[in-house]
Length: 439
Image 1 (cartoon, one colour):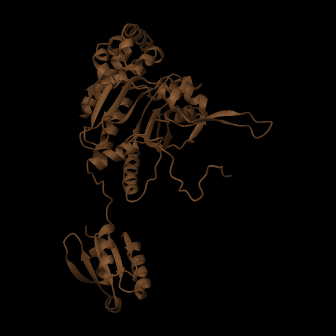
Image 2 (cartoon, rainbow, N blue to C red; image 1 turned 135 degrees about the vertical axis):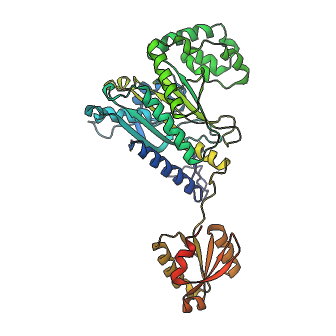
């Protein structure tokens, strides 16, 4: 169906806030995801895949109606009934994945075994944010959740420390330089109301001096004031009450155990009294990993974050199931790796086969098949290319070029040029795999 204002033949582009991921960039994405899967596997995590849309109620109840995510950023629509027996339903593209994972944990009765569940996911999330560097309306997250009944040890501080140590290992294996772990405790479900009341009282005479967003947050979600990045507000916010002064004995002891375990593992951290997560379900341990300025993320240098959510299952109608989890902004992680030049460029192929003349195309394809079956990565050129064009094309994508002319086909001796050294040599065909395998 066309609209009157449509321009015939106009180019349809990707929607604002979304983008296409193309080679060679996708090679880095695949490497990041493969590394994450390998690390998670060593820690006993299994993959979970949940729908990209859920009932809107899931996020309203789980994330919090007054959070920016729910009140401003969700893509929500009414799924109209298709039959008299059906009811219309409000659906939402998932803005985060923890609520969906916990919903699946409840729905499939994963806690009935009594065992701890370690689950990870990789996939797109959706928020109607203002697009900026590293932040998109469709964005990718790598995340994990550790959840289970209390009897499984899910409430233990060792679970928090293990997740943080795993993340430190993952970032190191990916080659992220200069990461910094910020840590805090936002207390239990009993601690937070006391602190929020104190914070709200302290903000009452000051809120008129704060930015417009903080004036609103002071009424609807005072904890979010602590996240403010407006320079003029920082001195006022720094003087507000600290949540550490409102933790009960159990929360204080839990946080001390987390820090002691990290110390024992040699994972460096800094306690940040203002670090709160913007979602309602967080309790006790909260954390954030940041990278230094100049790492490609601009002024907002958070790479990933997460925390404990001991009451989320009950909020969603399930059994008591303490848990802790995190989400890595994969788009931001890729930007960081590229900015820090850690294997940002796609790895070049092992070889480019340049047939000298169109009549050599079939022989080039046969040789490529042979080399690929030996485990090498190979691109095939076209015999119609001039030699200069073949060399230019080969240099862009491969470490070596294999020239395949009439002499090479007849004699079974290939001519190979290595671009890094400029060396050109002849090698018998049965020795070709060995040569091309050398980095």
